[in-house]
Length: 154
Image (tube, rainbow, N blue to C red; front, top):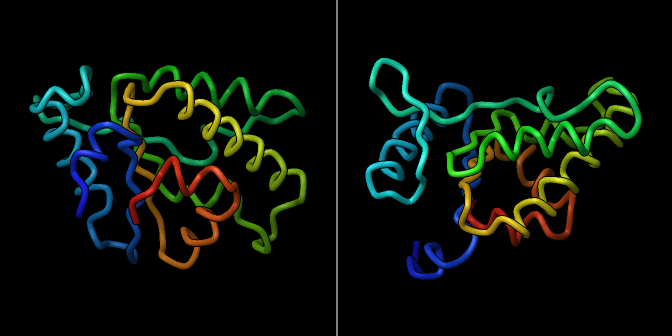
């Protein structure tokens, strides 16, 4: 990280990429512990006294019916304020060509749009770590023009 001050003052979100078993989840929990110790986040989930991220998957953001995805996504984000939110396999929100219907894809894009809007209005109030495989995460990052600015680190 060549500009640490911009990290503290701006969006503090991170995109982790790597193959299965490379330690993305484990590294995220270490970051949550560090962010909690440094008071960068106020509320750190703990399991047996060890800091843990608020781990979510694409299915936690996507609702079953038209008009329900944005409120459901917002609820997940509100529950993660002052915490570290870890979105595992984040690319699943916008992944196409994997047998998903276009309905699922549009719901995922609705979730991403809500995430971008929420992060814009809650700068410095939470940290999002989006993780997944490199190629899929590059596509995910370009799925919304504002996403790359909100989650600037790869």
